[in-house]
Length: 199
Image 1: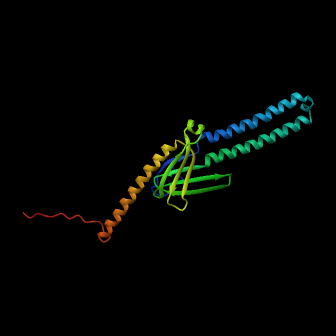
Image 2 (image 1 turned 120 degrees about the vertical axis):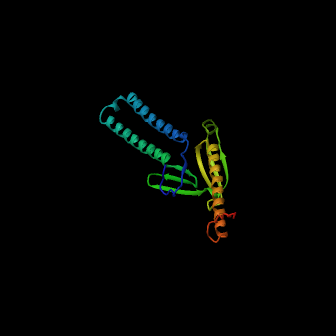
């Protein structure tokens, strides 16, 4: 996978979205908001038969159609917000892309070497049953706390991030050691000398 702003040789390890139960709540609300008007229109036509004739029938169906239109627009915004809110975890950093509405997108990043501590939070019966929760990352950067909210298997994600963090530290130490070795040799790589034995 590739994303906009990806660095050279940067590899994507995980792509995270909020747990499906977050979208399931919107589906439940949309179903209820659809069922109530349908039942209401049917009840009106049964209780007041004269309203099933024109022009009242056309007016009621027009209002119901407007309700369906606004309901679909609301659900589409919820679906877009769910799908476009992502956390991208690479071997170098964590990228948070948050979509607000259709025309506003916020992006923030956290380099792995700025991580100080990671805590997981699983709160409530639903979160415990469906195994989702929050991940809070304490950082040494300007933004002291970086949160990944309502994701599946937060403990597993924490373990992956910690492994990447240790790998990033090891890589940084190796690069620093290589630079120091180069400086000691006058900026030149160490030369291997082979001794010759005269017979």
